[in-house]
Structures are given as C-alpha cells and as structure tokens.
Image (tube, rainbow, N blue to C red):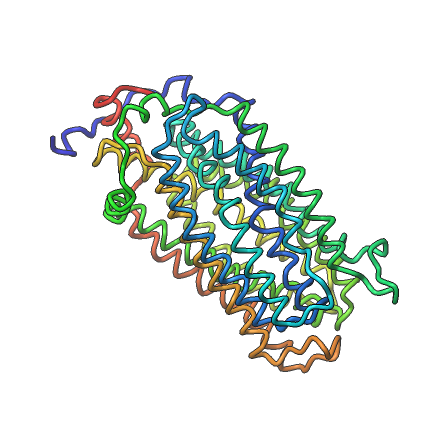
Length: 479
C-alpha cells in the first residue's frame, strides 16, 4: 500500500495516552541507574587514578575509551535480546531487574585498586574491571531505554515522560559531583593526613550501588510494557536484519549524527572542567576545587531540573521537537564559549553560573532526543510492520558511547599535549593551563553548531508524526 495514501489527519489523542503518575515516577527513578552506572566512575576516574595514584592522563583516557567502546558494542546485543524475549514479565522488565542488581553490586569493585601497584597494573585493572562491568550495566540500560520508547504513542506525552526522567536524573546528578567531595573528606585521609581518594571513591560507589538496586526493583515492579501484547505476536527479528532496517531509517540516522556531535565534544571536555578549576581558578588546591566543583555540578543539575526541563517542555509543545533541539544546540554552543570568561580566579563562582547554563541546555537535549527516537520507531513500524524499540535505543546508546569513548581518550591526549604534569601540583605552566581552557571552550562549541546545522535535514515534524500514528492505528489498531 502506498504510504502517502495512509497518511491522514488523526483523531484527538485518547485519555489513555497519558502515562499514570506512578508509572512515570517509577520509570524515571530508573534513570538514576543509567546516570550512576555510566557516569559516577567516569567522574571519579581522572581524580583517583591520575591525580591520586599518578597514572598518566593519557593512560587513564585510553582505559576509559577501551571500556566504553565495549560497552557500546554490548548495547545492541541486549537491545536485540530484549526485542526478541518473550516472558510472563514482558520483554524488558526481567533484564531491568537482573541488570540493576548486578551493576549495583559491582560498581564499588571498580575502585578496589592498590596504591602500591605499578602504572601497568593500574592500567590493566582499569581495563579489566571496565570490561567486566560493561555487560552488567548494559543488561539494565538497554531494556530500560527501550521501555521508555514504548510507554505511550503520543507525540507530546513522550516528551513529558522524558522530562520527568531528566528532572529526577539531574537532581540525582548532584551526587556525581558530591562524590568528589566524599573522596577528599578528612575521614578518608591517609596516615600522612592527605586525602585518600581511593577509599572515598569506594565508599561513594557502594552507596550509589545500593540506590541503583532499589531503583531497579521499583522500575520492575511498577512499570508495564504497553506494546508487549502486540509485539509478542510478531516474529523475532534477526540481528543483521534489524540493523539493515535501521540504517534505512533516514530520520533516525540524522538523530545518530546529532547525538554523536553533542555527546562527543561535551564528553571530551567534561574532565577538563575540573582541571580548569583546579589549575586556573585555584592554582592547584584540590580540596578547595572539589568544593567549588561540587557547587558547579549542583548548579548544572539544578538549573537543568528546574529551568531546562520545564523550558524545554514548553518550547517543544509550542514549536515541536526538531525546532526545540535546534534552539538547545545553538544556546549550548554559546554557553561553552562563555566559559573562557566565566571560569576565572577573580570570580570563582562565575564557573558555577556557567555550569548551570550548560546543564540547562544539556538537560533539554536529553529530554528531546529520546522522545525523537521514539518517533523514528513509529517511522520504522510504518515501513516494516515491526516494533523494534530495543535495536533503536541500543544503537542510539552505542553512538553516544562511541563519542564518549573517543573523547575520553582524546581528553587524556589533550592533557598530555598541553604539557600538564601532575607532579608539578599547582605550578603548571601557563601554556598548559591556556591549552586546557581553550579546549574546554571551543571544542564543544564547534561540535554543537555542526549538530544544529544537521538538524535542518530532519523530516519528522509534529504533523508528520501524527499522520504516521493515524496510519499505524488503521493498520494494526490502537495500543
């Protein structure tokens, strides 16, 4: 049947399109697992393994890149598995329960290194522990991301659901930066009175791991799979066939490019923010810098929660998702360029304000992007008559992690190239500090502007998505 003949103006969305409040909250707290399972280790890794244990920054970056690359390649496996699983608990929920328990228990183990180890042993420990952890967090996260894409068929309700998740994630994200404060608490000082960041990191990850398990159980218990009854009747889709269908989905491929251009450059400079504060704002005082970094991180998450989420939701409802994403990428680029003046020893709290602006735009991106991916799943179903949220969510995740992994390695190279030397403490050369600051301001600004230009090719407006839904419901009925 010709696609254009199927596209008609839909009727008003039924009340049942609304996700119940309990289900929204229960799904959203699962985002804490995604946040801590992927970012807590990365937040602490440079401070612990480079500054505290002395492993060269390029080695830390290489270890993070290797483990994140595997994490990305494992994601499609669990995405496809959850698409093709049939149990009395659904396709996604069994993986969510098992993955949250295993990843929560394993998180603190990733910092159980010894200060007496050589650089080679520390590097090997980082790589091996990361490789073992990757399948555990992927077991949770891919079915979890897929579940979010199928909880409602409504264009705006999808954004509302992702807004709830983003708000809870951002509030929980304060804990990421507080972990650095915990790692430098006097309670964990060694015999010489210096902060023992290794022990502090172990404690912070143990607390986070318990929270991850609790949130995973809540997600399993109170969230249902709306499309399961329809999906369980469809044939299982082989892995390669799913990939072939995905790469033919033009709107989805464009979103992958945008995701890569956002996640890669911003992740590349994420570690450089802490180094900028330590060596430019506070000239080497790690403890004082950790306090400011905590408040900067708190502003990032609070601005994101209380400004980024509602502002994005309002703009999206008025202008549509693709126009809102353009606005977010453009303003995000400006916020990074402003860091050159805002991260200043004359006004340390300027970095807090700048971080807040960056958090506001980044939160908006992660509200809109998953909602747009859900729309491209409808586009896929229209052409293939198959629901494949798992493969679509997993390759979106893989693309983000591809950007993250390369950026983690390059950030270490930037530190090495700049002339940064951890043995010099606060006496870093002016050229090293200048190079770090320049990279932090310019690289994400350029990447986000290119992503903004790419979005002009994206074809799925709100009207087009509504037409697709009407055609799908005529063919297979409402869900």
